[in-house]
Image (cartoon, rainbow, N blue to C red; front, side, top):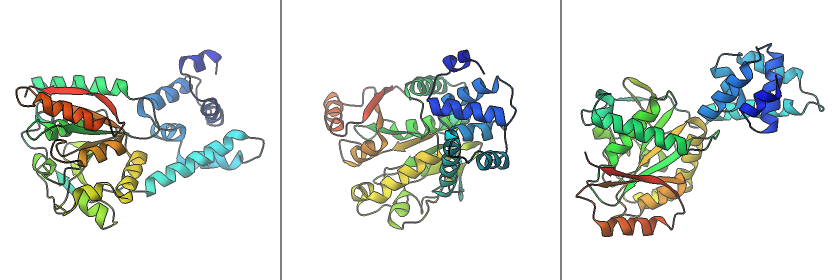
Length: 310
């Protein structure tokens, strides 16, 4: 492995050394270094996850390396073992096998017509957003918000989730609009169990797989609770999000309109990032200004705004 390899894919010194150790112990070709580092950048996964996903090693081989290198003078052995523990935690916390199936409805154009004008726009939006996300070993979480009803927020959130999942990365779409949920309608699935039950029952969320999109998972809003805002402000909801950050590449939240409720502000605070949606000839300027004013309190990063012409 050469210095040029590290310059082409700079990263943390300990990660580079861990990669070098794995390449040497597994007798991988020199170009595996660049392959691993490139995959880490693209996926946001850790060293071991990438090595395993690329099938450069088996879990038993990794465990054997960690066992052999468990010596005080070998600093990166600790890094390997810590990564193994982290991977085990990811698999055990809220990594739920979907229990239901969702079927994208006709309104979700991107799921049915890859060459439609809306689909082309969605791919362009996905690419632009992806370029703005910094490399991370945790999921990119994002709330899709709008000022009022009828702005096309829910459909945009759904199609954006489909688009990110088609990157081949695990994506979770969460309907956090417990006031007037619509994701179960868009995806033609049941809504008796969902986010509201996941928060109040302290049980694992009831997830839906999405037909013809194996990398997308849907969590509907569930039955309407009496106190949606209070549920979103609980420690339980924050813990759910932290668990999802460990298990998915992208988590996208649909939210209620900001003009009517404060729910979206709470979700935005926890999601860190927001995408604004407005509809041509529908969204009022004063509503948009009020939305921005209220959003400033959350200190969330505004990724951009989408003017919906569809």
